[in-house]
Length: 413
Image 1 (tube, rainbow, N blue to C red):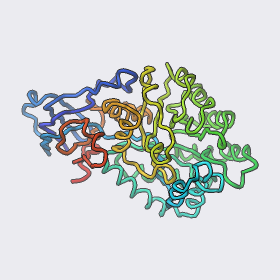
Image 2 (image 1 turned 90 degrees about the vertical axis):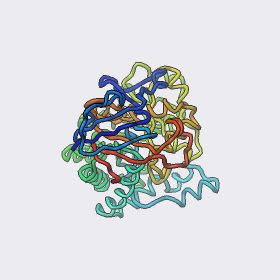
Image 3 (image 1 turned 30 degrees about the vertical axis):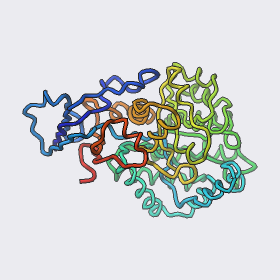
Image 4 (image 1 turned 120 degrees about the vertical axis):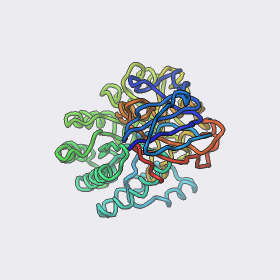
């Protein structure tokens, strides 16, 4: 199967294969070709360039993208999209003055989702989750990281990870799986946190490793959840089972979680709504990608990740949705990009870079996704006819996607 897209108003995010992330001032540049074509064979980008050089190319299908933009699909490196039920009552509770921490202390939050999921069958969990998966694909997401963490016992954590595996087998987008057993402390271990950590290390991890259910290991490193010592125990154990660290850090407090992530060469440190100068210095010259989740800040009315400080310090940043039932019930990466521009003062170029190539890096898939590069997967967004690519974040309430292509196939034909 071959596909040719012609008369593209502007082809965005064209890169050489050696560029796997962009940092600092580089994030202000979004390489592009105006009046362009792009040629795909099977699921791979084979050629692209100016229409002036598009001669004698035959294809099974040709799309005329006159007045439209083409860019890579979004790479959403942080989601909890596999969950059961919803938490709309907590949404109302926050409107009425309760904080996220207040709700968690009375048994809501993560523990609420865990209770619901424990009582949901594997088939029903899959059925609920794939509705969300289909929705985010149509919204332009072509790569997705999915975390466990609403099980909080051996059986249910495994159930979540097996559902993620089933989704991976049945959907064409790139999916990475993260084990987040250390998301909260279950009620039965309220007075024995070390007992729960031992359960994660001695019971959950061996089973997950045996079934090859996860790529990464994550911990909610936060006051009231898992301390630095707790987090280090779990990361070390996960690495022994071949799992690469990714950490929830600095959502509400900055107390050394970023440095711990860098120490263990975490692929990413995510949230970072609270960020110290020491955190920024620690991230310099590291392999760790800072990941911001602006939809979470929007929904919870908490501070936004200080993107300008990170970028101006020469660092990279990725954007992700944090799709989950409690703090971000949306996986719309178009809204994420808009919110990053509106609330975090990122330029459109920086935001698009953060949601494509840097998002791919934060998932460990930048070799094959995140940019328009010969040899990479043909996962593409074709916009509607719009005046400029800056219009994408500007018109934040409008769906500006005309078509989504996954592995060289139109998914909305």
